[in-house]
Length: 142
View: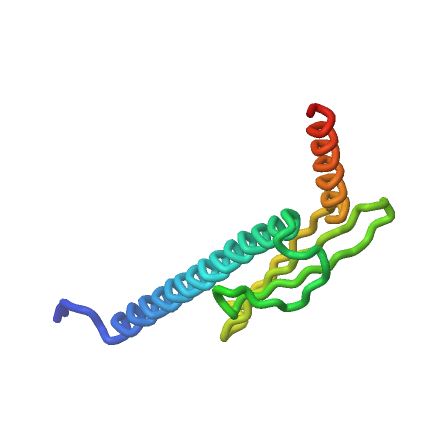
């Protein structure tokens, strides 16, 4: 007697292979989505860190230490600044750290950028000197 069709053992084996493949693919998709979220947060942290460092160098923010200061647009983001004097006169090391604290460990990100800069008072003194020289030149011309 010749039978056509599948046996129960073949069906169970094929279902086991299918479920194993489905599990592996879902794990890959989950890891991909986690990596995407982490990369997006890391990129945002880097952009915020660069912007804050530029604000400090431009004189918008004072060049003095800050710790865990929240950003005004989103309280989950915070920044801190460590100013370290160097062995070179009038030169300081600026370490800006931007952090994001979320509901899970996946959304916790920290980015630190370091830059060497001259003290802000040097720029103020230079601008004052240029202004005085311009004033003297105008008075001399009159």
